[in-house]
Length: 466
Image (cartoon, rainbow, N blue to C red; front, side):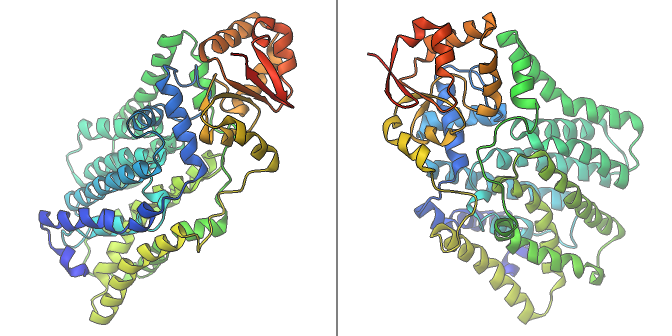
């Protein structure tokens, strides 16, 4: 099975394209709905109502990701299947990117389509790896930048163009998923360790990599004249209130365990490689260092989500391909091929049918469940930490992330805050207000024209008078 993809034949992309979707059928037929997905849908729908991120929507979702979810919800509404199909298609293009830079940078003994195959197999082992998440979209630009970085390491004649492209690609990645900003210093470290790049080019890399973030900053400044929103609601990592439970060690082992198992074998057996050049050994060391440095991404997340683990897959793929090239015994080669082809769809089937439970989801608390029956398909404003109330409702007003919003209600005596609050009530006109933090009395006292438009139907719940 593996031998079919050991030929450098572009027509091998056809069966690879089929495999991308065939291997994921268990989840396509029974889509797994994680809380993260509803977060993206809520933001996308809110942006359709002519709301700007960070100004009219207080949340830490990256700007490019938010824009893409706006388009997706406009085209497909809240379709989980659409995210998975688009994500699967993106993994196919990512597999091509990995294969192209593997060939161009001469990473392996022979030019094959094994890197694409292994990438498709590993990304088919868990729904988080092929759902169109911010981290999956950001990974595309990291792969493009990594390809240019390898070209820079390989060529003796260094080019400024390579550095500019590395910087731009690495700079775009955080605009999809902010913790990926760590790839910028990682790129500098890799260049310092594995190339003889001059100081001027390091400065060029820094300037080009922060340029996309600077442009985004000025864009949000120009459209609102208040740069503090972009800084506070996006750039301050870890400040915003988390919607998701962290990935436990057990859950992380399930998600990455299959690929990591073969990667570890590949790393341990790497000393037996006899046909690689010194350059190829150096590139293998580069990927090992890259994998170690990527662990720092986990420190920038609050909390670590299952989707972000996709960043480790390219490193896993490189060492698995080295393992495949090392195994020449027919029996062990067939055994390895069988495990690689059968393992991911089996694991995916077990997860999709919940034979393996995912610890990153929890049932609703009774307190939240009481409100869910009245908010379905309504424009609601939740004053408190209960994002899952928006799973079947629409966001009204900016206060989506309570970690970013709660301090605002401590400062209602400021005139500008009252003007801001009234403007958003007039604009969004929430049909239901759920006050979990006892903020409504303060609002009623200062904005009686707003409070008289609502009547209380149960504790903590106010409904718009029509």
